[in-house]
Image (tube, rainbow, N blue to C red; front, side):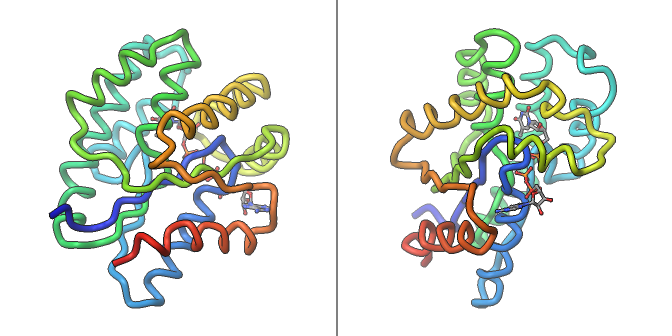
Length: 207
Ligand code: ADP
Ligand code: TYD
C-alpha cells in the first residue's frame, strides 16, 4: 500500500502558491495531522544549494539542457532526503512547486525541451504527487504581486508578461493532460476563498 499523501501546488509566479501551501499546512496541523511543508527548487540541504545555482547570478549561466539536469538533480535529492522518508512515515507532504514547474519553465521557455524533461523525470523521480493544485491567475496580477517582493533570486518573473502568459496557458494545458491528478482553482479571489477551494479539493483524499 502506498503510504502518506503527496500534494503539490503549481502556478505562475505570484499566484499565491506559498501562501496557500502554508495555510493548508496550518489547517491540517490544527487537525492533528503530521505535515511536511517543503518547496522546490530546494527542500533538502543539497537541493537548497542547487537552488542558489539556478536562481541567482547570470540567467545565461547554464545552457537549457544543463539547467534541466540541475533542477532534476535537486528534485532527486529532495525526494531521497525529504519527501520519500516523510511519505514512508505516513505524513502529508505539501510541496510548493514540483515537476510540473520543470515541464513548464525548462520544457517551454528556452525552446521545446518537454521531451527531455519527461525522459529525465521517468528515469530519476520515483513518485508523482497524488494531487496537484493549480492556482490559475491572470499573469498581470501575478506579476505585480511577485514584483512587490524584493529578492536576490533571479526568477522567471523577470522574463516579463508574455512568458507568464505562456506559462499560464501551459499549466492549464498540463491540467488537461493529467486531468485525474490536477485540480484547478481560481486564484483571482481573496485569500480565504482560495483557501476554501483548496480545502474542498483535498479533503476527500485525507485518510
Ligand atoms: P507565489 O508563491 O505563487 O509566488 P505568494 O503566495 O508568495 O505567491 O503570493 C504573492 C503575494 O501575493 C504575497 O505578497 C501574498 O501575500 C499575496 N497574495 C497571495 N494570495 C493572494 C490573494 N488571493 N489575494 C491577494 N493577494 C494575495
Ligand atoms: P518559487 O520560489 O516558487 O517562486 P515564486 O514564489 O515566485 O513562484 O520558484 C522560483 C523560480 O523557480 C520560479 O520563477 C520558477 C522557477 N522554477 C523553475 O524554473 N523550474 C522548476 O522546476 C521549479 C521548481 C521552479
